[in-house]
Amino acid sequence: MLRIEDLSFWEKSAYFEKIDFLIVGSGIVGMSTALFLRKKYTDANIVIIERGYLPTGASSKNAGFTCFGSPTELYDDLKNMKEKEVWETFSNRYNGLKCLFELIPQKAIDYVSCKSWDLIESGEKNEIDPEFIDYINKKAKEITELDEVYFEDQNAANRFGFQNIQTSYCNHLEGAINTGMLIQEMHKKTVEANIRVVFGVEALSMSSNYQEVELQTNQGLIKSTNCIIATNGFAKQWIEDDIQPARAQVLVTNEIENLKVNGTFHFQKGYYYFRNIGNRILLGGGRNLDFKGETTESFETTPQIQQKLEELMRSTIIPNQEFEIEYSWSGIMGVGDVKSPILKMLNKNTAIGVRLGGMGVALGSQVGKSLANYF
Ligand SMILES: Cc1cc2nc3c(=O)[nH]c(=O)nc-3n(C[C@H](O)[C@H](O)[C@H](O)COP(=O)(O)OP(=O)(O)OC[C@H]3O[C@@H](n4cnc5c(N)ncnc54)[C@H](O)[C@@H]3O)c2cc1C
Image 1 (cartoon, rainbow, N blue to C red):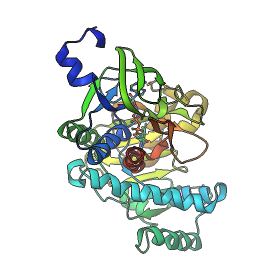
Image 2: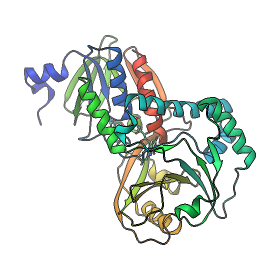
Image 3: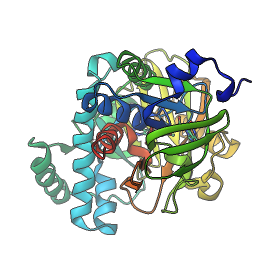
């Protein structure tokens, strides 16, 4: 493999010299940062390096929910977090989605305003009462300016063909996108904006002398005036803050005839989530079965979690239908004890934006915008 120092004059000058902004990671955050920097600095030399031959974290592997808060999550958060933080988180996600759609038109990523349902299983203690729904609707209206974001939908299980569900709560503002189209569309926009994206280059270490950042990579040294780290679940090597990798496993079925499921759904406090993709089902979750084992950077699936997902498909989601699993994979998120991202300058010319948790579709573009605004 040719190292950067052995490249031609043309290659070096086109890709690796006089860089104003060097971005590490080509997920939603890395690419959004590049696009917002371009809006601000029309002539800047912007380069993104990505260690994989595709983005290799969470942005091309997620479920594609455009979600910002379900009643059971809000209920739990209001018990465990300060009220102000709960609604700030809600607002950041809701407005983050607006930011995403300003950057990438909804049509280009197959956005559907399909709603979401928070399912309460039979036998589960239902902590959500009408008073709570009234309360979160009042608070949600202050942010969305819309009435009745949430309502109880007792008939959903029947309509969609689920079993073992006592009731559900619908959020009529949530929807879904095509994750593959989002990552492709972002890449297309970065190339159109004259931003160079170089795949197969992994950042190993960094030093900064306040005028310049020197990034040692697996392909050699790259220098840049400024640097932005957008490596999410793989950020531990750069900061001492509270951030851990968190693996999330997913599967997708074959095409199922007469599938009734249409929308996005979550249950067991969001530990499981599913949606239809045409007439297939995507189902993910189960990290709660093995938190320790799933705190890893390794892209694998495990029999324990995959079997649980298949079991839920049979018992709850499509109980009377034959299906096969055609795809299964995992992605790595960045999580911590709190739900907000880490967003800060590491030194005069290096910023970091990581720990997007399970909400990076909603938060990623806004984090990119904030990172660009540091410079
Ligand atoms: C299975 C799954 C389902 C999810 N579902 C949803 C959902 O429905 N809705 C939602 O809002 N969010 C969801 N998420 C979360 C969301 O996908 C993430 O929060 C978001 O993609 C994070 O974007 P990012 O750009 O910060 O990180 P990433 O997409 O992880 O990008 C980081 C990039 O940095 C690269 N990188 C890492 N280290 C280096 C290095 N040293 N040198 C060079 N490159 C490096 C990686 O290869 C990677 O491409 C889900 C996540 C997973 C895994």
